[in-house]
Image: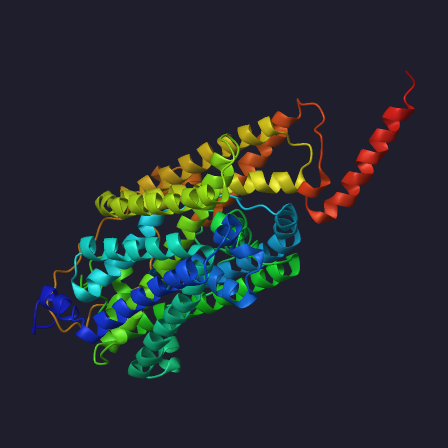
Length: 548
């Protein structure tokens, strides 16, 4: 036990001091978002469903790039990446290699095919309540305001501007929210770096505890971040997150031509690099600031994802309004993800559920339908935020199962682009097999972690110079990981690749029993089209020349 000045609970409460200026900034951010919805909903009206869902397919490149970055980087990322670096070191940063490989794949295959087919729906599976709940925790950390108050208010503002303004309102609020988000993070790291003593001091303190490191070259799949998992494994992970993600593809397809969409992919990649770099540095800064008194071991914060909000209140508290900008930035990321999900789900309901099974709607009826979907799903999300709060450790399990579902989905799309002999039955069977396998492995892995049977080595942390009293953490006895099967101990970065591989293998085996499929070359990757066309012509000629 260290220090004699005060108890840790008293110190914790002292960090919850939001001023009226901070609240004003937060309210202004919500007001601006609502105003954009009003502008595109009532002043610059959108006359068609195409305008509402796809921005008329003539959106400008720069706002789309901002929107792509804002849609992908949620509050979960802003708070989770610094915590990852703080606990496990800098190896996570190298997953950007997988992001680069994903960009190459998507620009040469997915974008040309989907753009030529002029599709509106690809697929969407969004865990929207979680997106709102995590930044609500940050708001609670810095203000003490109950999440039951702030979550519904923020959700309702988002529902309003998404419902009224459509994709254009979503994209332009994303632009503002991205600027606020980046600005907030820059404020934290600049002021924090000055307090710590400069960039050199930040890096030297992290170097001393081996937080600055390269991924290991170990071939073991259970290695959390190895050279292989951050390259091969994360490539599958990024393809699952971007290439087959409805909300992301909807923005790529909102541009007028393929060249613009390809530029948007690389613009998105540049933005993600910037955000991940800023968040990673903030994780290093957090350790440099708290290296003599770890807030986790001393229980100054009760959840790992509250590390960054604590840093914010520590370094920016004397600047009135600065904590407000940070909270506005975190919620901006959450609003962007929520509005993106709602708009995308409206497109999915219309294209994948209504049009194939029900009668054709008039222009006005279609707009009523898609807006109603936004409102209904948004209200469901408001209710589910209260449910998510009660899930506890199940929350991590739920997010893990969501991640595992990306693999089979990516496998189905990749087969559709590259393997002409796969038929519908094979793809469906493979998808089901891949989904069951990935879910089972992910679930068993999370259950093993929850029971303490599977742990990951964290970087060293110290509490030798704390200025408050706290109860020392109980050191648990080491538990051998031999009790957990090898397959359940593989890195989380392999979950997507596992599901994808099982899907493709099973689909190939099942499709061997089928007859030849009728092939439309437009559905396949561009570099395969000429071969497929030539193959079809040769087979057609052979049939004609066969004597009767």
